[in-house]
Image 1 (cartoon, one colour):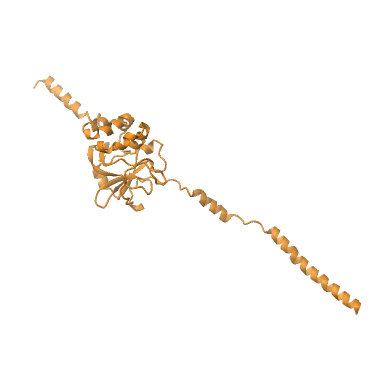
Image 2 (tube, rainbow, N blue to C red; image 1 turned 90 degrees about the horizontal axis):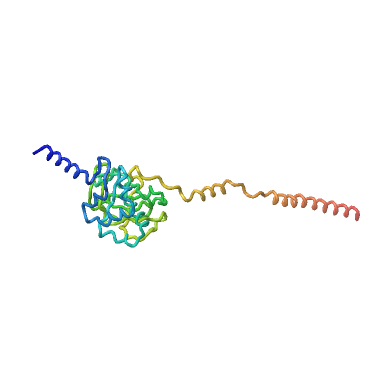
Length: 262
């Protein structure tokens, strides 16, 4: 083989190896998903909403991808709402199947791109990933009282510690902090929330309690002095002083009358 042919062959393999990953520390989510037509609708929406470029700008990311048959919900939403819904499926950390199934504890709270956008309220921008008793990994909103919307199916692609694309069964509902659905939702599976000790250490801090002000108010009321009773005491004091004086005057008058008559 001539040196020119060898050089051309080297360039070909170099190009092929970088078609999915543009460098050792970056990737192209569009190219990754293009390898499987099953995710074409999801892939197109990532581009339409501008999320594809956001994903590609990250060093570490996990994308929870939906197949075409799980995308019907998005056809009824605006582009802006689709961006919010899809950004909840983009986790700002690396999680492959092995890492999820081997959690030190049963659940982990995942920070998503929706949380980073600043548009989420309370725990809306966090996703709860839980390993069930049968070994299945389920995903749902981290808002307290939420169920599990999606099940982990398989892995689409991984580049260790940079990007993991995981196939899940359904989108994850954005929930209101009170626990009601922010938008239409499929019927979630019954929640099996773990105890507080079952979460991974990267669980986000709890939001400030809405009962702070009432507690302060109650404490203030408890320490406040009762209304002054000086006026009442003053009135009763007059009665207490005047009554003996009148009795004494009556006794003296009676005695004087008695002596006069006598």
